[in-house]
Length: 265
Ligand SMILES: NC(=O)C1=CN([C@@H]2O[C@H](COP(=O)(O)OP(=O)(O)OC[C@H]3O[C@@H](n4cnc5c(N)ncnc54)[C@H](OP(=O)(O)O)[C@@H]3O)[C@@H](O)[C@H]2O)C=CC1
Ligand SMILES: O=C(O)C1=N[C@H](C(=O)O)C[C@H](O)C1
Image (cartoon, rainbow, N blue to C red; front, top):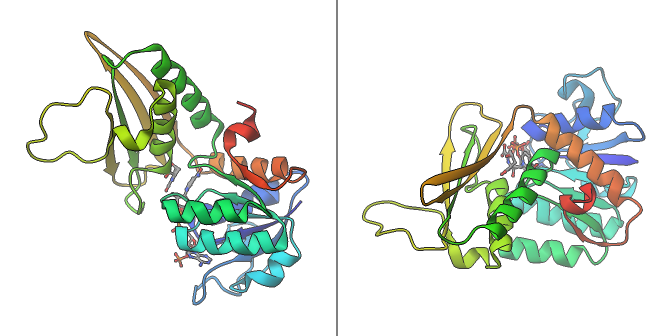
């Protein structure tokens, strides 16, 4: 499968170039960065710490998408919505790892999915998606006497909060409880907050250092607590998940899919 990496000079972009180069059945068909990036013109392999791959980084996605079969996109919401429209025009697979998308951004992805096969997830790792399944089950089994609190920690450069993974886990908990996350979500607490409202799902965000991604979901009940956790140690888990998603989506019909579809969970 001929794959393009957009945001090629990012933390995930460089990891994705390595994952494509290592994956059986995949070749790097292009590497895109934004206009003005210092990476433009460089060999994508060299950028990713590999021997040269013969693919130079460019800021012109149109001809690159036209000659490709899929795009791996871990960039920004503004870039991702633009790339979704280009991927739909080119009728290629679009794997979206970008987090922090607004409702309006998601509506643009849904529109693009009429023509493109889009796989989107706040976390492309096998481990997190398994934990989400467990969270759904535990939330369904326990009543609201168990308070649900989600804590995440990421590196100091992360720009969105709560993380896409924390929201994915919150959605799983809400689904298990049969409620809608926006109705019960509490993402900030400061000052005299009053007592906790039964049924709320709380989010706490920590930022610092080089943490790849830590998440825990605690069910705090009368006299006991259950905590389900995931610790990402290497961004390669997300990159390998993204390549797997592209290969999975290649023969599928246009539509918006998630990692649970890819992993068969
Ligand atoms: N779903 C998942 O499993 C995971 C999701 N993520 C998400 O992926 C996203 C990226 O994370 P990360 O790699 O750490 O961030 P980085 O900031 O390191 O990388 C983003 C890259 O995209 C580039 N970019 C921005 N706009 C454009 C554009 N219009 N065209 C081409 N390239 C563009 C940036 O360039 P410049 O810096 O020059 O602006 C940068 O190189 C985040 O939303 C993060 O939360 C991360 C890990 C796993
Ligand atoms: O920005 C990151 O780094 C990560 N972002 C994703 C998120 O928002 O959950 C996935 C992973 O935790 C790393």
